[in-house]
Image (tube, rainbow, N blue to C red):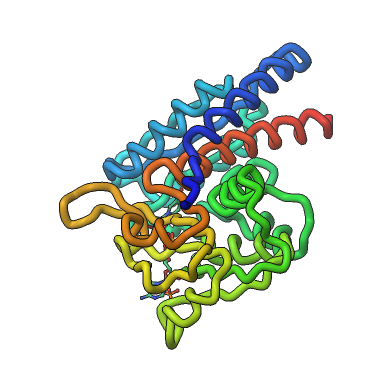
Length: 285
Ligand code: NDP
């Protein structure tokens, strides 16, 4: 019998804790933490993600400021906006919803966000700190995965973890965090020779590929814990992960569903990072 790793209910619990904490912070410092969210264009998926983040802010007692721009905003204008938010004393965290239109360099925008406000954890400073084991803002999705593993008491130390995907925002930082948790880590990608052979050796399998139901039951070891990061649409238009949940789940000891697994935890870590940014700024004053 497999266990469902319920990221939604875990998130609700954690968000209630964050709300209690932000109420204390407001009492102590006279204001709540504040997150500025930048949205460019009208990509429906991005709009949904941003709405979810706004709702989470509300639930956590975090002030959210929305900056919406038309698709044709120039890179220069966007950089100016980020710099203004960097300098704004009332803003603790800055998030720019990706993807951005092709004429804007995502790297340039991410690099412009001040490291002390980089609550997404995507900046080179945050990623460098992660690599060298220093305290920093952890990228939200990988940090959410670790919280889930801890919350469900899934042993990581000494286990073999296979991460499928090596993006800078999910695969690579997830691998580094699992390494930090003392797992033995294999990272797979599109050039991996025999992917199924690799994934079948995983005690913990993290799928971050972006292909619907790509990881099939035969690619999973009996009793593995499976973390499905993917957010895709299946042929019938339904939301699904990178793992063929229906057929794979009976082989697993624990598995995250999509939706309701990694997604809500990603947003919850964003909330925690925003509170951390606020506390760090006040501690330094
Ligand atoms: P990217 O497209 O940046 O990376 C995908 C990775 O998958 C790449 O490293 C790629 O390899 C690898 N890959 C592609 N095809 C194969 C293959 N046939 N075999 C093995 N590896 C392959 O995606 P992201 O990391 O940004 O996102 C991955 C998924 O997670 C997406 O569905 C995204 O929507 C979702 N996501 C979910 C979040 C959440 O909160 N739940 C947050 C962020 C993302 P290579 O490097 O060689 O090209």
